[in-house]
Length: 434
Image (cartoon, rainbow, N blue to C red; front, side, top):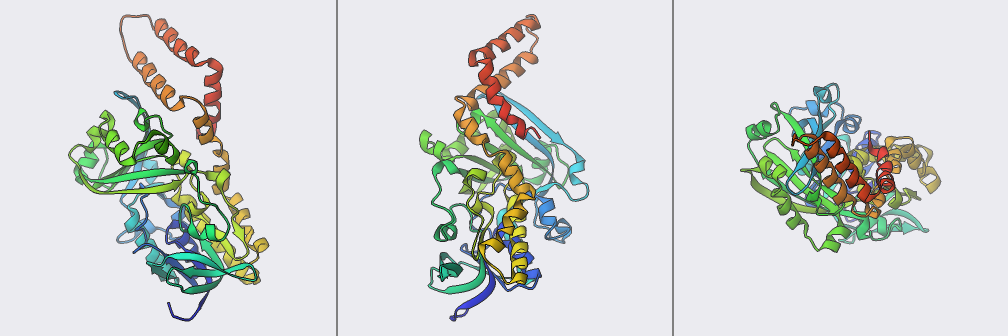
């Protein structure tokens, strides 16, 4: 960047899925775009598990998986959920080669590698990408945002600034979009990458070469906190992580690193990671406020997308896909505003309309009350996993007792919690049944 004040059509803060998607779309349309990333390289600050849903990226980079060196690890053919007690577990999953047909459903990825590949796509489209640049504030003229100021004191001007700098976005705070997030609005995720030969991964997860699997584990393994443990298969490593509300970690005094070690000892996890070697450990905040905590999405000369805008659907393990779609729609909004020569809030509010007409806001709105419901349902995370495992124990046992006795026992367990309370607990879950 030059010592003079630089002027761009758009400044994107953050080189993650949202920011790079916006940059690619705008640069392809001929706009003068710069991306500012505070990390040493794109992906340096990321700790996503990580699963990438393909359709959204395919809309921006068609057939990306067919590249000579695609930025992916394994094509996921099986997705599982596991419910645990301390010494037992139930697994429910779905496996199908249909996941690989046409545009493959999803891949496991390593974010540090993927983000660098995606940043190169932005540069190929014509955007400038600068790393190691910390944006500290916005620049205003006549009360309207017209650029950003870096920690080095440089000022860059633009018709539009798009905040894509992740959870607890500094630039969004400076723009007056958000306050500092509460501990109840974020999860703290900790992840360890464990080296394991490809053949062992494929053997333990019953996979063919190049195929992948994902697993989310709930129940006793979260120690009464709202969250889950995950395992994703990479080419020659496993991503093992935990993620729970920051407020829960504060309440219990448990550190994520301690939680991760406890998870490793559970019978279900232990057998899958046996013989693996730790490669790296990382921790990161993840937005959990969702639809209710979402800030205004547009102001004069300013848009916000991705984690910075609370666009994470924890109920469905979705974040990067929402970020890519939001970034794409933000880019399209800026292109249209450029044609009109109008970057006012009224003009840029078309961005929210686009999001409302997509799956992004529809899905986030549908699950907006789910976490609060579970948190307010006393003992939810302890009672239902235990109930499920005890019912399974009875269902698959032949102990010489009439089956009707097992039914009475099960009814007694539900009666103890209260039939009405159970119905009240479970009814809101209908929204995540599909």
